[in-house]
Image (tube, rainbow, N blue to C red; front, side, top):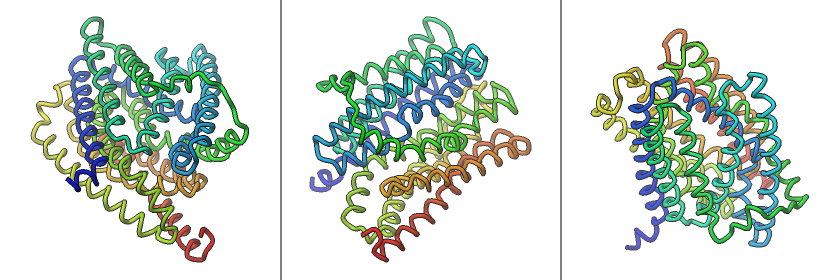
Length: 413
């Protein structure tokens, strides 16, 4: 009983993570059977561009939510949250106007892209509420709402694809509807926050100061995480992008698992860093070991199950994705390593270092992706992202060692 009480949040995160991952996996299977690869590729491109919209709307300063939740008093945090939401609305208006201007010029070739700023705003608001759940260690609420959102989007996706047609539009509609519905659930009892407009100049300055280096990192971060899909679409075709995106979606279960681990560990990481300012390296090593150990064990189990059932999981039109999934699983460990190192760097507000690290990692990833698609095909592109993350982690680790030396010298104590 004491063990359950001690590790209750971790158990809850994992339980809901497994359930939510299962639903996400089912959604991928459904779409592979109801949609042709080229339509799956359209969804991948939509989500790829959406990757840019969210940090633009949040000014890439959403890391302040967890930091301020941990450091500020209740009144101070309420002031920060209200100002940040208002700031996000203003950013959304500018981004949406930009998308409307770009679409007639042919730069945004798919009309679905016009929904991306709205989707990005919704994801920002969801992310804020989710981070508060994590920092307050409300693991059950966090997991239950995430699970319900995924379940609703899955059921609606099946319904719309069956009733109407096999195009990507209906999957995007399902995602938007589910997110909006459970956005209201997340803010139940405090809906006033969503339409209370207030700006504290000090908060805005803090957002700009913290987020500006990270906003600059949006381009390299996008290149590291999403350029592989653009490269596949450009150097191959939309069909190839479809089965590549399907493989990434299946292997993406690892990302969900790593996120659950990080959610459980983040409050403890911040607490240990605050209470033990001289123990940075030992703290990082301990939490890296915990996350990578659990991730590796889960990855091996998932890879084994997938190996046994690959022929059942993938329909014939997506058969080319079979080997790519294993590569995605392997290099997800590098993403897990980054999640810990990036969290610690954020704690020290070393955003300029993360910008440099993303630039280096993105450069490696893009170069390897372009080279590998011409030599090894799409399978090689999948590995390029993992290599980029390893380079990124090497830069962040070097910076943390530098901070530790300064702490020992008394500069951060």
